[in-house]
Length: 192
Image (cartoon, rainbow, N blue to C red; front, top):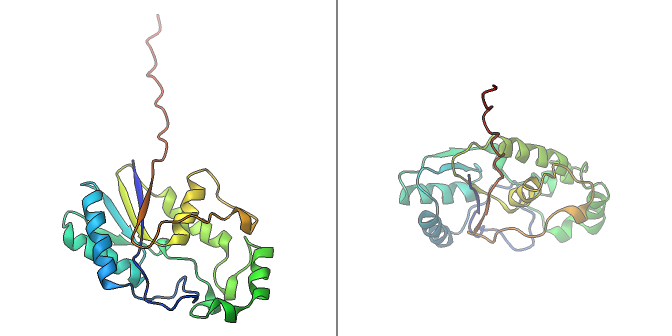
């Protein structure tokens, strides 16, 4: 089984603004281009789940218009992390001391009163654990992709900010995971 994680196209938000759970739109032409690439790559019979935030919803609906064999479901577990009162603010306005407080208690701190990394990881892990055996596409966000890169290695929680992966798919790009399928035990042999 392959799990595809596609990131939404370029969001229409000013550079340097915190926009985790902020429901911002995505660039239309960039979304169309990403949908065309995904439509050519995703296999028939693929399950599709998407974050309900509009930047993901647009990519999902554009892809499904190109590929009518795909039927999307919208799953709030695939939303980006919620930064509470930090949402929509420039990182400079949030301030270094607030960011340092977060990194000092990376797992438990709730940035802007929003969601902790621990809570975010638990939410994404619940979706990860629910993936079945058919090929699946998630249309989601960089934070979810980073969380999945940890889940794929068996890491379900972390304590330090330096443990958080930096790599994520670019806007409109994707990565795949090939979860290991447990080896089947040979059937019992008849006993003589």
